[in-house]
Length: 182
Image 1 (cartoon, rainbow, N blue to C red):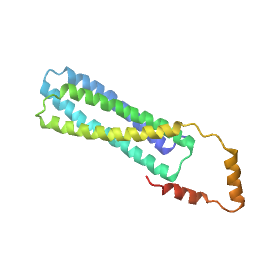
Image 2 (image 1 turned 90 degrees about the vertical axis):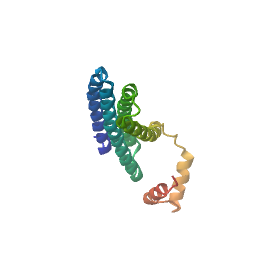
Image 3 (image 1 turned 30 degrees about the horizontal axis):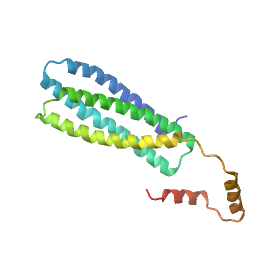
Image 4 (image 1 turned 180 degrees about the vertical axis):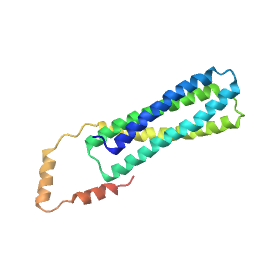
């Protein structure tokens, strides 16, 4: 059964996919409009609405993952979560790149306040999306790493420390990991 964060990523991916399909239809209508002013206004409105909301959804999910990671997570759950996260990120990137493409093609009047605002919104959302993509990609690399070989000498050394009473409790170990410098 998927974790809550997996379910949220799956549902958000589906949601972004539906918005993307609806926007594709709208985009064709916008591009076929012969009035350049109307094309610029509609594309700018879509960019101001869809771009930031898509990035916000991804950002909220990433914040949830960070919280879960601080609490601890097993490798299998992390791997499954990152698979869903990558799908979610790809869906966000796809709709965002479509928005940017359409905006660049249709919103050419630099003097319209809507175009100026949309350009600023797109720039901000693009920077945020890049940061989130970097974070998710690095997590995905960690999730996909093969486990290290088991070193029997380390196991024996750990067992000896336990026999001698020189070990940390799981709570102490987690606390030590959580307090590592970022």
